[in-house]
Image 1 (cartoon, helix red, strand yellow):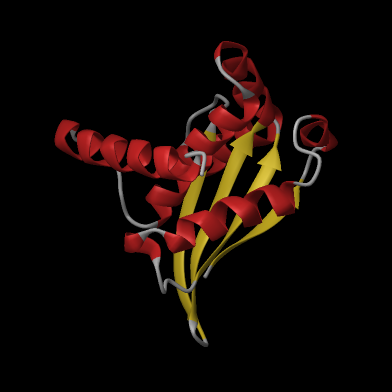
Image 2: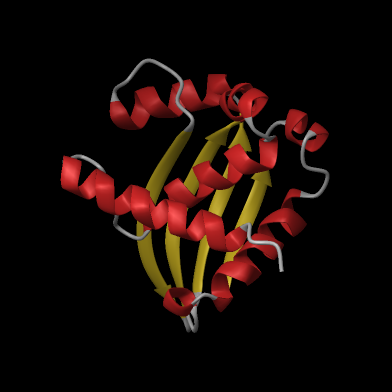
Length: 148
C-alpha cells in the first residue's frame, strides 16, 4: 500500500478539495493496484501550501528566489515494512492558475505524480531523462483517471 500524509498548510486548498486526505487516499489506492506499484509499502508527505512558502522553500533548498509548482525532497528511510520516500510541497496558486485551461484535479494530479516520481529517483536534467519521466507521468495519470 502507498500512503500519503497530507499537511494542509493553507485553508484555500479546502475551496477546491473538500477532504484532501480522502482525495489522495483514493488516488493512491488506485496507484497501488497498478502492476508496477503492487505490493509497494511506501509512505510520503504532501504539503499543500501557497506561493510564498514555495518561494521560501525554493530559496532555502535550491537557491532560487522564485515560487514554483512543486518541490520534492527525497529521503528514503526504512521503517518496519514501510519505506518512507520523502516530502512533496505543492503551490495552490500555480495549480489554480493552470486549472483555468483544464480542471483543478487534473492539474493537481499531474503535479503530485511528478513530485512522487522525483521521490522514486526520476529526474529531468537530461533530455532523455525528461522523456522517460514524462512518459511515466502520463501513463500513471491516464491509469489513475481512467473511468471504470
